[in-house]
Length: 120
Image (cartoon, rainbow, N blue to C red; front, side, top):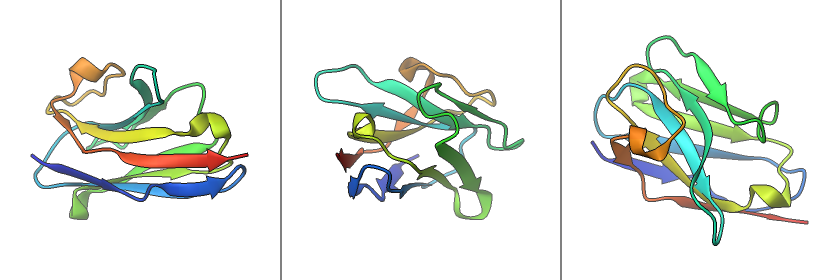
């Protein structure tokens, strides 16, 4: 399975962006992680493919929304009220197991990453 992420860019603080991640094949749970310069990759949000159950990191709760379109094998991350601290490379990830995880090693496939930069 290959994952293709898109939608990153430069936005001012308070603005919005929507990331997309298209999977070339069927997966189960999918997630978004992000990695800031000099820091480790961190969990952002996850969604189960069948039940649509979602889970978020505390830092993005209420501002970000993860969703998916099964007909397109695509997951989205709607990011609102962006802050400079959200600046990072965002990665989508997929796993074959039903339940989502919050740790990188729990995922089987990774996209190439898309840069999100939030200016103050």
